[in-house]
Length: 89
Ligand SMILES: [Zn+2]
Figure 1 (spheres, rainbow, N blue to C red):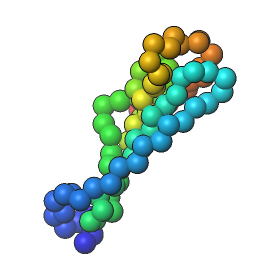
Figure 2 (spheres, protein in one colour):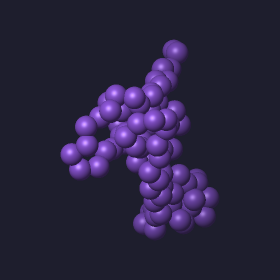
Figure 3 (tube, helix red, strand yellow):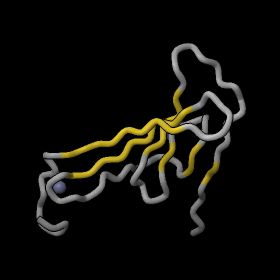
């Protein structure tokens, strides 16, 4: 099946990865997905592009959502790094 036919996307696979960057207690739950039938990747919408401790974000092509997370009642240690990607129109 190719992308131009009508795939029902009823058999899907998702990957979750917990990533950390630098000396911080902030981690990022990275979510990607794919249709197992037509192989098209899941594409996220509506999130800012980049990565940071303050809010959920996504990869520029929408292929990955990045959710900042901490465990239990941990407090943010303030050492996290972040970046924003802005589109020039
Ligand atoms: Zn599909």
